[in-house]
Image (cartoon, rainbow, N blue to C red; front, top):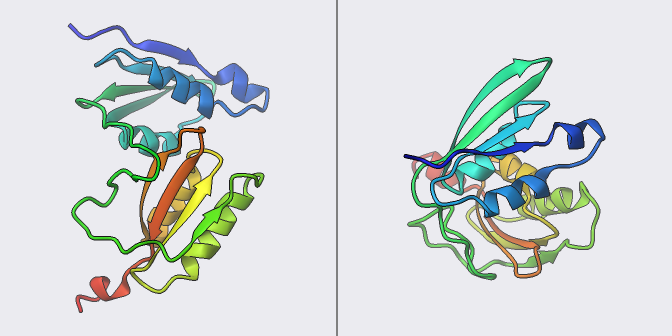
Length: 178
């Protein structure tokens, strides 16, 4: 028998203009092994699907009326281990990555500046080259943008609650088959 879901209603936070991401991640951190998270929200949180998917969760969403959504995140097996600082999780396992050409420290910037500067850094790279960025939090929206642009990335939480991401610029030669 699987454990009962952990219920989390972030609709009040969202309606007050707040950002519930840290509350959601705190809830994920206290889940028992195999325990699902039942999230109530005011929209379908697609970026969260990717974030929790990377941690081994499957998502099932349904609109419950009035624009509100219920999303159940169920562990798909053992959750991936949390990586140590400086040792990014293998988002692109099986591929050799060159050392980053440079590292940007963006932890003291206000959103959306860390994302903007990280994207500028990636766009300055030659195909297949890498860069690293230190960010104040896990860059959920940056992940989505990098994926859309065809770049590869891997990342890890830092001990001070920041996040380090290493990004490999899109390698156009692999796309063309050369």
